Image (cartoon, rainbow, N blue to C red; front, top):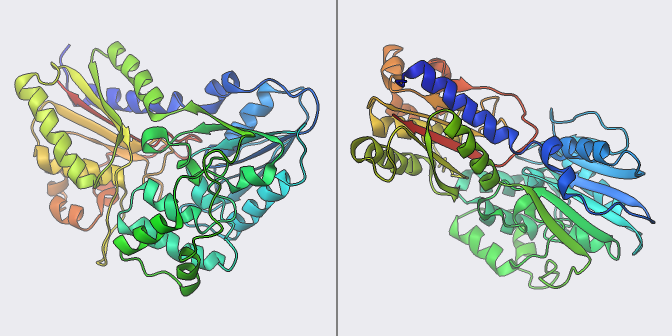
Length: 425
């Protein structure tokens, strides 16, 4: 069967949906739960874009366990629960509910005993959704730093290194507050490399980073921080809990980018495509990754290398977009990647692509991602758009919205980070 635009568009959307489905907490959480507690309390805490649906999945799996606790999720991401409190807060910049929610989590775990069990449900977005400032720092100070980190081009590991050293809950401090209770963390990874200490800034995980590293990152990216933040980062005491200091805490991944990519690879076979997973932890400037991926796709089309067509190149991870100081439009890292890919391919026939954030939100707004057709540039120019200028102005949401190729899913209630698929036929 020959490939053409309609078939490719349908296949790309099916692959994106398969990536999201592979990380559905209702499908994956129950198999990873610890043995049910026989005595003591069972306190549930959590944060992230999937926190509420993870809590609902836990309630469904343990209907006979007297659960109590609180989870924090993004506005619009709450689902009904009967025993676990759900608080909604802001993302990607924390707000007052982020502060109140973080204090509520700390309150939930204090005063527990060795007979008690804490189940921590963590997923992407937790770093902004729980914001308990360290002593001497205000919520406004944290908001200033957070906005600067988002705009400077720092990757997620670097951003969370700074966040952990400005927090009273991140970097293992939540688990420390819960001692001597046993803490079992179940997590959905949205970070390259699935580093437990980076997911949600690791509230229940020992932290290897230091104040010195946080200071170096602030200097490297030229971030102007409030004086109280500079004073906090100048400390070499009050460090986060280090490896070996939280023996009562354990950590388990229930969904990861690679798990999702493998599920998509299975779906690709059913669509008549040979899948090639390029990696689950790709990072770098979104537009540069777009150029690189165009080169690989052209090689498949022209030489059958590194795989024969019809094939699909699959990848995950988290690229970055450095905004700079000039004006910019509406966009996100996935659509910026696609617009750069489009310009590098320049309409070559036989190549189609999709890129999107599996949480349903690419950057800001309601766009999850987009599909790219060989005709995308031609259709955009026919509408009077200048694709190269829109890439320079970080206006990729506007570009794909104008030609009808933006994907809008609404909140998916999970998050295994970015998903990219390029079909070559």
